[in-house]
Length: 580
Ligand code: ADP
Ligand code: MG
Image 1: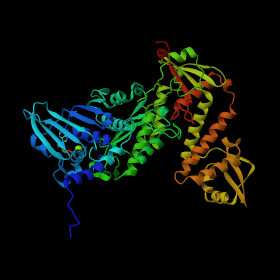
Image 2 (image 1 turned 180 degrees about the horizontal axis):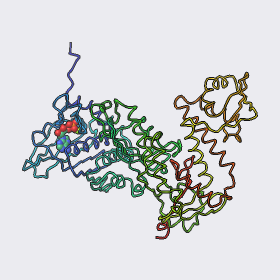
Image 3 (image 1 turned 45 degrees about the vertical axis):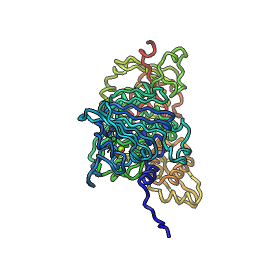
């Protein structure tokens, strides 16, 4: 009988491994770029033909390989990056498994040209189907050039599985941007079918973001930075005002490696709660530095997923850092009609105004550590800037009509237009929230008992949460069958429909499982804010002093320039931008 069990040839083994590592042209680009970066190069050139299906070539000026290394680098498990097990825990290079080149060589036609600084001449190696076809000596510069031709030529099933050039190119560009952002000090050239797509020189992170995403990012991003014992956070977050409906530019790196995590994405999104609406996505470029021992980047073959030891702590730190960044950069929406169209500005002015929201930076403002310091520092700093006793900081104020007013700050060459209604909502919202958060009772108003009728289930929910509801100012006199009788309501809520408010509380209680208290407080604060502004429907009667204190109060808010629905309460028009 013939033997049934065969030892697979190394070529077949490599092809199986290639299935994991090399899924499409973009995976080749990723592996080659990471190798060039590990070789400490300063310049990388990438040449792509037909979305990488016919050619991917990466040329670097890194340390290169000598003839011996060049001959074995395509063998499986050949790596210069680790020699013993302990090295794996300390690894800081992009690759270390030693399988990328072996995998690539098993599914394409590879040509390697390389030279080290020490050697006079370099080496050319040609490989087909994992076998060295030719080795020769060549005059070349220090560094490495690897060309990968006819990807999957020997695996038709995989080749057929590739998508259109457009889609494969999109994947390549994704990988390219992920890497180019993290390695901003390296110069990159990228051509596709002889057309130059990128030609960017080494620079800093901010400029790299602008090189890739365009000049409009100049004012769109806010620095984020936090150093703690578990993690250091650095980078930029997009101005929440520019958040997009589509998941935009979201780049998160752990120890300089691009990763995907819905969990940490959520941290950044919650930091922007109340500033962006739920269906918008913030953009960010965030770098986490974590001791390599406390992350496992090796859980997924593509290595874009990670496991953290302290995931919860990291979540909190990112969230706090993002909040701090937003707070430090008092975001003033300037005249930008993609943000808000309801401000009526003459058409001729519209045309001459650049489309960029300008950011006003108040670098002293540090609202980090919200509970203890935020209020104090915030108020202190803003007092310095806009001291009520020194009202000269506010140079001019004037009502435009019942809803809008204009103000000009001392030493500022710009005009601010304030939406009084939205400003009142923002102020009331923050005040109410603050007093509820610090469990200062709202002023209660004893009332003619109000009856609220609910079904049996909802009554149970009220009973279970009666302490919470009472702490918000709704004192229960009696629960009779399916009826609750309230003897007091928060003073600010006297004009609202108690039945509706209680029903919406119950809805929240049913939906929410965490932070219910905070959610209720947010909801109550919102309702109170709306009611307050409705009561003051006519803002025209605001005389100067009244208007002044409204503006000063707004400036004291944590998020002064955005209303509670994420729209601007103030827009800022810089005169030199109108007339230049
Ligand atoms: P890994 O990167 O995991 O070590 P690879 O298969 O990607 O494995 O590469 C194998 C080895 O080949 C690397 O460890 C490195 O020594 C060498 N190498 C690959 N690409 C380059 C390059 N561009 N410059 C210098 N050396 C390289
Ligand atoms: Mg590698």
